[in-house]
Image 1 (cartoon, rainbow, N blue to C red):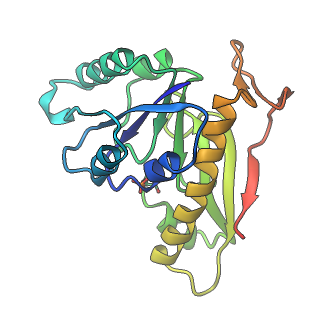
Image 2: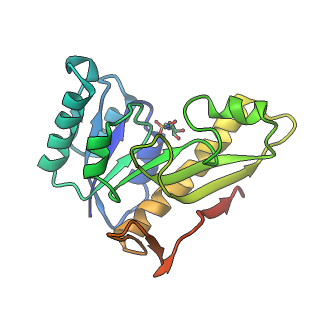
Image 3: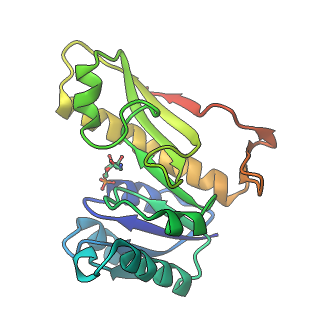
Length: 209
Ligand code: GAR
């Protein structure tokens, strides 16, 4: 399994994937921001990088086509979005259906979009966490595969939640990517997802230790 990781920032999830000894191979790291620290991490790991700056493209479609061309050039089987902060067009997403994952810092379907920790606190949620899901044309809405779950404490604030959620992300993302690499998890042509050969209805929940 040849994997590309798409990033925009710090790249701690990329690092967790690099450290995970996956049975697949990370063949390229693509960023839409030249300053993303994630690119340094890829360099250190000896992995090819490419920066495609969205502001250099006249339209979202033109940017997406450039990303798509790079993924094809790397002969990618699986696209892993790891803090990639660009919305991808439906045309692009459709081409990678069942072959593109994202991690989102909330227990989807709760709190789509940005500022998820603030939203969880504001809503008075007793549980919060992160979700790994397949990417579909609707934002943060593809089938959820695994969730990292924590209990919100009375003294939690946005920073403490961000820190705890990140730790869970680093645990569940490599796990799900490896499931795809070793075919424990399979996306079928009819859109159904099998985990250990059984249809997956709800995401696997992994609780904070
Ligand atoms: C992660 O918390 C990830 O869940 C979030 O960006 C962060 C990237 O951190 N992604 C989204 O909000 C996507 N909607 P990292 O660069 O250290 O991996």
